[in-house]
Image 1 (spheres, protein in one colour):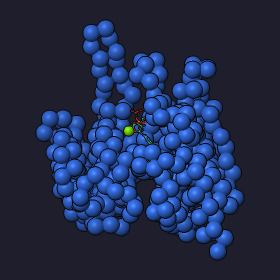
Image 2: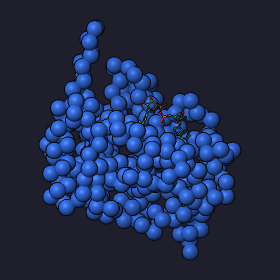
Image 3: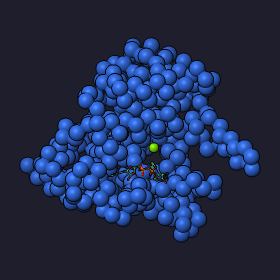
Image 4: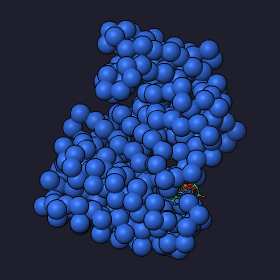
Amino acid sequence: MKLAIIPGDGIGREVMEAELTVLDALCLDEERILFQIGYGKWERTKSAITDEDIAGIKECNCVLFGAITTPPDPDYRSVLVRLRKELDLYANIRPFTPLKTVKLPCAKTFDFVIVRENTEGMYSGIEELHKDAAYTTRIITRNGCQRIAERACSLAKERKKQITIVHKANVLKSDTLFRDICIDVAKKNGILYRETLVDTMAYEMILHPEKFDVIVTTNLFGDILSDEAAAIAGGLGLCPSANIGDHHALFEPIHGSAPDIAGKGIANPIAAILSLKMMLEWSGKIKEARSIESAIDSVLASRIKTHDLGGTYTTMEVAKAIAELVLDKNKN
Ligand code: NAI
Ligand code: MG
């Protein structure tokens, strides 16, 4: 397997080093191609990613991604948004299954997945910036809705056979299309559905997270709701994601480059390591994926954890502890 490795910026580089340490422990025969793209490259060259980079990434089977800084600068275009479009990674799958050993801020237990449309909506990239007004075009297409709804339903078939459609169709007319298509697809697939307005969802997720299983929503809503979900699942440092298309896939923690802690070696590597686990599941390496999951549980149970979880260990100390257990497991 040919893997594109994109460490990116800030803690992206630190958690990628950690992730690759665990990948080393699996002793697979993958080929790794490094792409040094992102804000750092933009500062050096005024280009965060080139067409050549995109072509190289497309030649790989999949991508392991750290995190990339996106400054609020009108001249800078998000690298990740571009990659998601160029590779047509239309489904962003974000599982929120709390780890056994992590203390949650809420009393209730839960296990849900956010299926976020990943290529259109408010992240269409069609924007106009004038002196006294600015416009962003929100794009919702039949094809975009259809394929994300199909993804959500096929995931629901493996789980509780129900989806929650999250939208704002009472105000945003573009969301009536999203809502109607999701309902059609759910009916055709024999999946139970209910719908919730996004603001109500933000509230319900805190009070009753146990009510949800597969949640399907548009790009910006999915982005915001998944950081909220991370807060109730123990923190951004624990939450992975898979960006899936028909021909490519990219695996990344849901967090960003965290400039407030970058360079200190204290970022939690578990979100990135769980993203590696999602990549292994995607490529059919189920035994290896399980070994990562159980190693993480054991390491956290022995109180080897980073600052955000109340520990004192560094990013690499946690990663090496996980890697050692993974190595042992795969030797036996
Ligand atoms: P962020 O996710 O980087 O950080 C939010 C908060 O969570 C910070 O306090 C940070 O210290 C903490 N945090 C995040 N990951 C952590 C980890 N692994 N361990 C411990 N604590 C962790 O979001 P923020 O600060 O809003 O964005 C920073 C930069 O990252 C921005 O330029 C933003 O555009 C970019 N970004 C990139 C993403 C990506 O590449 N996928 C996703 C989100 C933001
Ligand atoms: Mg986000």
